[in-house]
Image (cartoon, rainbow, N blue to C red; front, side, top):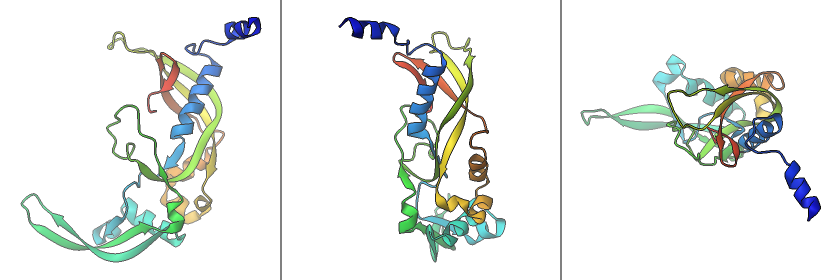
Length: 208
């Protein structure tokens, strides 16, 4: 009993702003939100002819994924109704996930608080990599004089390790998804930031 009491007395306060507590909070955050996802939560995805001509994001990205067998495309038609109730039918290239692609269509944990971002709040997303903590570089407290009584906040700067999906090695994918390319290349050096708030049990990411 004496040994347990001594151990408890020596254990750090979870609410202190120190390296150990910040690292724990970062690890907790990345365990839940560390997937690098592509904001492609609703399938199938239609690409209209006009999008192909204008070079929209999906018009560039879907063929890159199709080339690797992650999605399959087929010609189809879609309907659109304008504000006057007039329906127009137009041609699209319709892409859906293949069996291989579904391995990367991951369930996403619900957010504790509304984000206002429908992609962030989607219950599934197509993901390219998993991030884990490399090093906590530092943190900076945030002052909220306009919000008396608001919980303490701090912005943590960190570097990360990454486990990318094998298909992200493809040059076509890297060109079609430049942010994925940047994040993969930045492992161990690129500094990211995350905001944490103080709760009754310790520090917790606002985006959790």
